[in-house]
Image (cartoon, rainbow, N blue to C red; front, side):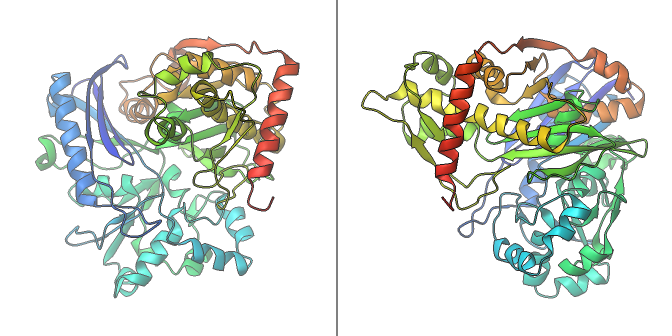
Length: 497
């Protein structure tokens, strides 16, 4: 074995493979998109075979660009789109149907039914999650109810359930390993995050046979060894974490009170709460940040549905920009005398509002409002929503104090204007890392440290490098006025206004 680490980053629209060397530097990247399927309104599916082939293609491309051979890879780390559900035949490995994607809303009525039975408090207490179609459990229950004979076959142990990490490990190991990690398990609505076990009471409610569930391991553990027939070498899989938790690890947010936020299509913010399993009163999620050496670290998580997607709307919907990179420059030209607010509730509002019926709105327009003001409003909306999450997190958990340095990643962080406005509206520093591939880096760290070729958590934290820190520069009066206007705009957008 050599000193290289392969990170597989399996996302919602594409799969990526990144090869890191022994000094944690990227030496090769491969990426492959795959088709999205929308069989009905609100339904989103992936063909598991498409995912598998995209992963293989990405790996081979990354090896080629890194100029490494498979036998030089010391370990593999996997990070993945969370909550997406696959069920397959234990003997043949053939999926029963397409994967049901985390974005899929087909189980909304089932979630409402469980809520009417007054079961949400039970799920929140045991899993830290709300009853929402977003999570895996109701998707799995739907599949077992709608594929003929599936539930009976599952009870006999003939079927396997997995999130994408589990499915990939199964394929990579030639069907010899049916495993997952604690972070992915914690997103299923079936895993008790206090006891770190599949919960029999929740399984009974969802009518899911325990025989089909994978073994749950630490994030850094022995997940199996690749079948040499897959890409030419037997390589140990030593690290697994869901994408947002992997980004938290890649940002070295190992101390309680540290926070990361990823800005892609949407935004996901995680606040490390250490050993405190904080019960949110602000409708945030309580989740497992990571489990290493048998020790569980928890986090509060807030989800923003629309972040970079608002910029895409400016480009593709309104056609007022030709490229996303134009927004920062355009926002600088906006009239400071206009207070234009975009509430991007195109698919409802996420945390801390959780209003699926809310819809997008623009407030404060005048005859002078133009593309520059729209660009500023779209970028500021991301910052305002992050402030809402930070305030909710501080309300739920006072142990970390009110001083939070936010570490950011994702496509939007390339905009200096957006990051400065984020620091201004948070009234807190914002750190942009030197390595922005934090999700893959987190998976690679888990595998590389387990293999003994990368440093442990303390040394990894010291090696984390900052590209730039953005310090708040906005005066308090301006910040207070802008935040008051935002909250008024949100209030007017909520479905029960």
